[in-house]
Length: 248
Image: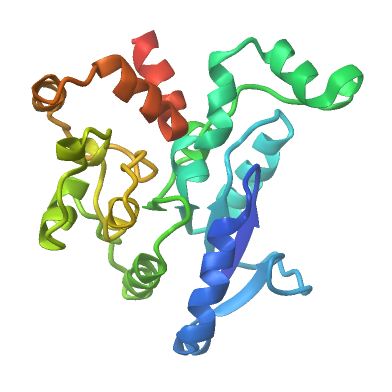
């Protein structure tokens, strides 16, 4: 029997699910290997019998937790799909500000109509078996993760920094151009897409294991840049991690 797969979304732009749709259009063989029983972005049918759940989006309100826990109870394998599910993502930027102020800025005099609380990754609520990082995810990495899961293997993720991919592409380092880039401490796997088009990495794939922060500080000093400016850039996707680290 084909493994039954479902896709779910919480607070997100759903761009990662659109990347999945694009991937399935060009790799239709996956549709022969699995049975998708729920995928709001792509189908109207809705089945509750699934073994693998892909979850996009951060948890941003109390009522999200029971729903996510039900998904976790049903799924033998739960995969965090993209930066919001993996890191808390852009949604977590608001965590650094008074929540009531944020609610009133967004909803005005209707602020009390909407439940919310500090955004967090899905791993803060339930155990996660695998992660596909990025904003959005890399379509080729999605395919590799699915293939690994079908073979009963733990999906591999690069454990080296983005700088490796930049060097393989023979890019001029953005630090040499006076720019900022989180490549030295960010997990590779996206093909260095942002530096390829002239923009510095913003860390959407999360930190590599045991990042060399001292070396990063030395690189910044060498180029007349500041740690504070880099930390400000890291808040795009890493606010939740920064604040959790500060609590320890």
